[in-house]
Image (cartoon, rainbow, N blue to C red; front, side, top):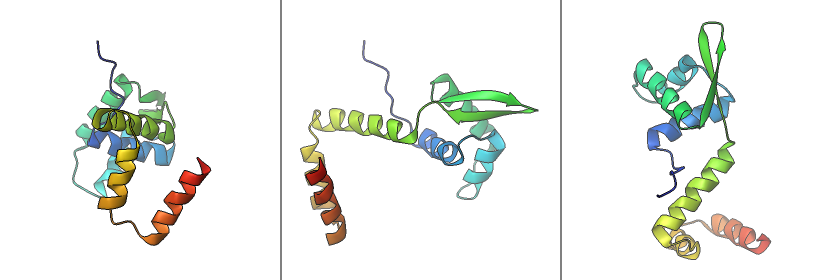
Length: 123
């Protein structure tokens, strides 16, 4: 059996970014943050937070009348896992084709290329 994917859907990732940025958040906190960028229903946010809790990405605790959600893993850990899964799936685990693709197709600035070269040197 294939292991469970750690990749978040675009909507899950959007919600997780809000919770990571805030450290912990209620449904209303996330709803109001997302509402500044796009129209979304309060019940959709509530459902998505419950889905993320069920998947193990969030924990909730009761605080007065509202649940407060907090991430179970740091953002960097989840991003690292998602990138690893992406590289495995698309490039058979080889990172070089991804880097070459980014360099050729993303039209990186000289500064970005120098920064990338510095990271490669440090590795």
